[in-house]
Image (cartoon, rainbow, N blue to C red; front, top):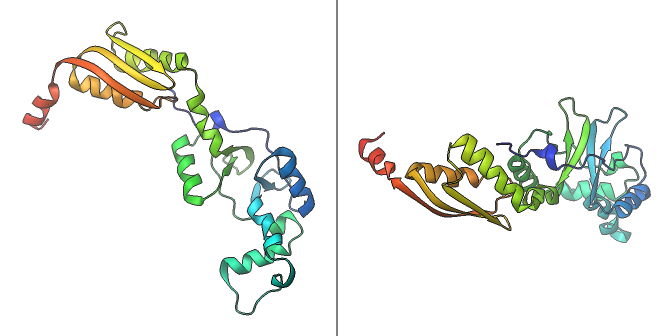
Length: 226
């Protein structure tokens, strides 16, 4: 069963800027393409950093009398104030960029987005070259799979190939990503495994288990410790 990775959902045509791209041009690019951030790349398409709306908004936050540096100002506040005076991508960008590789699982990408508090991740190859970008919304693409495609995946790849279950014995119904399983299998452990594996199929929202079984092998396993 194929598990979707970042390369299955990422955007391959990426809006980028160079280190010398001026502030106003970056603002125009974000507005024109309706994105919230752009990677900063060098001549070899290596990712140097990312300029986000948050980086650009520092110029507004620290305007007027609040623009001058304060004595003994450190950390994030000092960095933000410095960016308020920045004029190019190299001065504005957040570095190093948080990146992900094309073969990374969608689970890992989602965890990285959450832990780093970012909305999108540049996707880079083994040499650090930009090959795409993945956003939070992209990770939800697997839930847009048609129900008939999800059902076929379950029948062929889970029931037939993985568990050797005759599809005539188990009815698989998929509606809006919700899978309902009905039918009869030999063992309780087989039914439990089917539910567990089907929950991992791309596009499955949840599984409603209505499976019956002929033999409860979990009781024997618990009693013998096997």
